[in-house]
Length: 116
Image: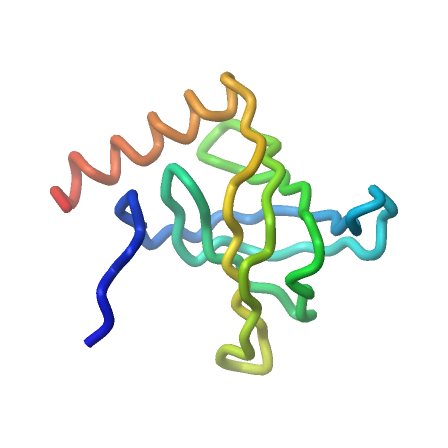
């Protein structure tokens, strides 16, 4: 069994989102729609129809309950999942204070409900 090295608990959560991928020079390479599979204070797992290379930085617009939050993150892995979809790990890099407040409130509700 591998040791969990995450700093924050992840919670299963299905949220629609859009993403835009940028290279290290800030050039836009691709965009698409996906959904979260799980989420934490520091990252999320994204399900997409197309693979996203780990060299990209992504700008995510995530629908969390009645809010839309924009988060910039780094793709840390992308693997083929079920049904010919891809599962990508995103580490948050830039989160505005407003987006972080929404995210913390959302995760706090999961914690209350499931007590993990």
